Image (tube, rainbow over the protein chains, first blue to last red):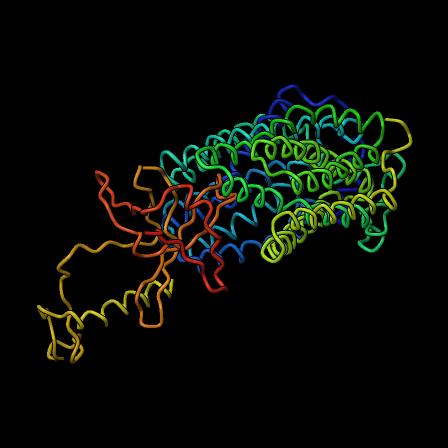
Length: 414
Length: 139
């Protein structure tokens, strides 16, 4: 690690400016917006462009594979780069270019390139937002601040899902990607209002610690032996193994069960949890500070098998939407507590963003296996069995968390 | 997009079967192939993949995402993707080709499927690697 990390140890003493905090609110909001169209919607768009199923599957697989491989280097890069703000700006621009390429030239080579560009940009953008947050407010205040980020991000997600879904339905699938490209501008404007000098690059890597001042970034071997890191990564993997397939299964089940209102109900299954996340995330951040990380993590992980079980038992589409709001609780906990616990664990190592990359990879692996496994169970034994299987994985995640995850809140009472 | 190119070639090669008005044959001009003729189709042909699908009563259904043909090359079914939101929770079903027709909706061509929305949503899901269950009208 370069030596400048060890030097400017005092950091900015002043509270981050109001402008920077507001900027971060809206940056989190618009970053969530510009990511919405790149999900499963891409395959809808490519279908309208007369792509074959084989080509669509291939380009999506290239994207998933690159994403699994790219997260760790992405996080590592964010640790190494001094200006997290500039890094985030490049990433947002990359996503804008990717959206334009997708909208303008839907041929295989360009879409594959656009997908890779999007993956590369996302693998640094995710860690960079958390790094800016940590650099801005410091470790002591990061819990409630991550809660606020999650609120704006979920509001952005929910709103964008509604607007882009409507746009895809009433205008055209292509229009969604033009809207995405346009939304890059407010994202960059929000980023501009975060002042560079308010973001301490060393705090942003989890580099500064009162007890470990002047220590160089931890070696990788030593870093991965930090208490809780491997357990948290494993729990996150199991969480997404249980979680990722639930929404698509719910969606296709609701599509099959309800006629006229199917689209609206599936939209509600996507948007309602985001509204819950927006409502409760700040409280989750404050409680994580007051009660500790462990009880909040346990609460979030416990709702997952509960949701799986209820989905297995429920047939009524409207009840399904109600059960789906439980996703908001686990979503808020994952959105706030995972970066918070990582910031705890990575404190004093200078490897906060690498740790985020590792968790990002675990998320991707869990989500991929979830879709494959649940798809298999649903085909062979029916959709209820698939939900029970997912709930079982959720129980496993909860048990692992309960048995092995230490409390990571610093004991020096922040 | 190799399959698409292959499809176009297949169309050109298949054309002589209904050849009526030869456009160019022989190899005198260099780019012609002996024994190959191209014709202008007598009836209106439309591209199918990605086309919007509706039911008779103007309900939005989904899109054609694939075409299934038998060993003789006769098209038997269209795979239609429908439902969901933002691409999440969509279902694919295979609909008998005879239940499918094309109509002009002002400026664009849409696919009309001669089944109700309820019949479509209750149809078994299409799985690419299995013998497909094809939905057809009962009468």
